[in-house]
Each structure stands twice: as C-alpha cells, then as structure tokens.
Length: 357
Image (cartoon, rainbow, N blue to C red; front, top):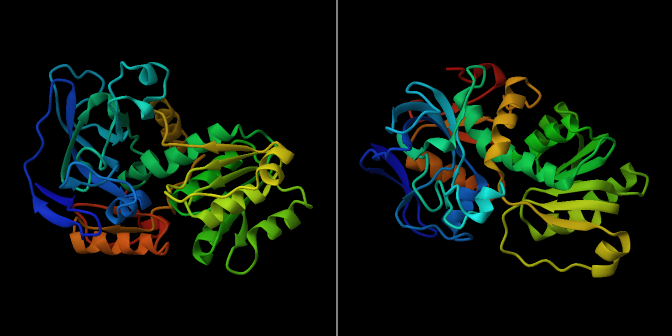
C-alpha cells in the first residue's frame, strides 16, 4: 500500500510503498477514507516533539471503513464507518482504570509512536474505533478525533458554566470547534482572537466576537469589551509565548486559563499580579479521553457542533501536497483544516461540496 512517511527531523515526508498491516485477534483493519493534517504533524517534522521509530507514517486524525476484524472483535463489523481514537492504550494500568487513558504507561499515539493514517490502510485495536454515523462525512469525522476532541476536553477542564465570558486564542481547526462548544456549554460571550480575517469571519458565523490581533492589542480589546473585567475562561490553542501570555493577561478574577497549544517554549509569569492576586487558575490540557468521543460524535450528528466549514481543503495521498500544507502550518498560515483523501484529487471545499459518502 502507499503511505506518506516521516523520514527525519526537518526532512520532507516521502511517499513509500509498504505492506498492508497485519491485525491481531483484537484488532481491525481500516481502509482510510480521510486523514486530517494537524499542526502537531508540522511540529513533528520540525523536531519540536520527537517521533519514533523512524521512518513512521504520520496522521492521527483518521476515518474510514472497516475491512477486516480479528477473531475476538465484537464491537465493530466489516463495512462499518468508523473514526479512530488516536491513543492506543493498554486498558489495564492505573491511568486507564481511572479514565485518563492519554497518560497510559504504554500509550502509543497514532502517527507519533506507531504508524498513522497518512496511508491507504491502518490497523488499530477495535476498542479505538468510534462509530461514525452516515450523516457525518469522513473528512469531518477525521477532524472530530483531534481538533474537536481536544477542544471539547479543554473546555471540560475549564469548568465553563452558563454565563461565562470566554476567549479563544487561535481559531484554526481546534479554535472553531472551541467557539461552538463554548456556546453550547452556555457561554454568554465568546471572543475569537486570531490574525487571519477568514478564520475570524468563520468564528463570527459561529457566534463569536472577532478580535484581530494584527489590528488591535488583544488583551486591551478584550478588557474593553468586558468593561475592564476580563474573561472567566481563556483557552490558548496556538502554543506561542505571546498568545499564552495574552491568555493569562486577559483573565479576570478567579478565571481559568487553559493552555492547549503544543509548545516547548518557557513562559515568564508575574506570579502575584497575573495569578495569585486574582486567584487565576493555570491549567494544562493534554489530548482527550476515549469516553468523550461518542458524545462528541453525537453532538456533531445533531449539528450542535458544525464541522462542515472547518474542513476547507482536501489533498490526495501525495507527499508534495502534504509537505506544502505542513509548510503553511509552520508559518501559521493556510486553511482552517486540510484533510488527506487518498482516493481524491486536491479540492478547495465549500460547505456544499464536502463529500457525504
């Protein structure tokens, strides 16, 4: 089968021919219909987060059709549409038993520590398969597994309650989901902070108040819009020192600041004025939980969460096309979310043109 492989830090990904993966008794083989290209993948190629082993097939946002099942598999059937939870956990350790499977002592993340979905086929444990209803296109189902799921988990960590004012720093794939989910959780106002007008326009369609960080100082503008109080919840989705700092400074009294963006940068904080003096909580949010995914998929099926405009481009299983997308992500430019569709040519999507196969 064809697969796009990570070959080393700061090296372009390569299209290779590799064997179709074997499956064990509790595994399934999935024919990939869609694989999202995440900002994390750009971080991996840049060396911000180590990948092993090398070479490795990237891609952790995956949806497709079950082609083969192991002898002991009972929860999915051949021909079923599925999206895949990307953390392969043991199910038995302390963290798995307490529902925090992302911290499993033996966890293997798809496209990071084991082969992912930039390929024609992928093999995973059957417990990682989440049923994908017919109403949700494969392209959107793939992005639910990371962009939307990560936003969902972060908002749960924030303990957002009805009437809260929320600021989302970075409204790409994660941020657009966060805007909608915050509104669904009862946020009174949601401020979308970004420097790209197209992303801000989309966030405004989902009910957010746009704040263009290129045109105004984001913190000053948020303080102005909240009559000097600041927000109750700030979610940082980018992983830049500047936006992490802004999220903290935009927080009001007893606010919760959740850092989601992947970063290896240190951050200097005025401990009293920015945290202790206002009793601000600084919270890290890492991935999501397996048990959160069925609820998230159901929210998408009911159109509480609309991902139809988040996937703005598809590309084929072509290394040059994927490398170009990763280049754009490293520059914090490009589309809201680009998805690899192995059997499809490159397409710029509008809501009416997204496949519903």
